[in-house]
Amino acid sequence: MASSGRAGLATLGLGLTVLIGACQAVTMPPAGPTASPPAPSVTPVAPPAATPPASPTAPIAARPGTPAPPLGPIFNPTPAPDAGATVPSGQPFALKIGQAITLQGSGLRLEVSGIPEDSRCPQSVTCAWAGRAVVTLAVTPASQPAGAVTVATCCPAAESSHARYSGHEVQLLGVLPYPLRHDVAIRPEEYTVELRVTAASP
Picture 1 (cartoon, one colour):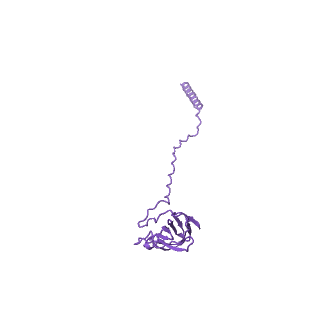
Picture 2 (cartoon, one colour):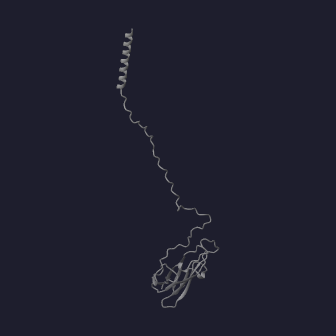
């Protein structure tokens, strides 16, 4: 009976030895680096477009009561001629105060002496009368003494826009600039006078 016990124990010990050897023979694979989870996908967002500033030249509505831009008399005068220039009969021309022309053919010399009156109603004012501009001219016929002629943009009839002198007709066509404000006077050098002189038929 004792022999049987010892044989069983020996058999059990041998089995344990084999089992331990088998466990030691099995090798676990080395632990590798831990894989990182994939990074979340991020879609870039463009910054909002900047709002352009308001244009400083944007038109501004006119305030009630603002006077309309001046119109005034409109004509296209021939540029003021040089000193001693000759102009054909019947051709319009423009002169500054102190300038003169000689009429072709007749030799009549005409010079703008001055504008003694400019009572034209300014654009920014409501007037009971339109007013007028008066122009004085120095006229010198060929081989004759000098004389004076007065023409005006308006009434009375004695100082109308037409005048006759030594067989010539002088016509006032316009006076620029037109007054804009009652408190701003036009300087003499700013005036331009348009005229037309026609020699009488022989």
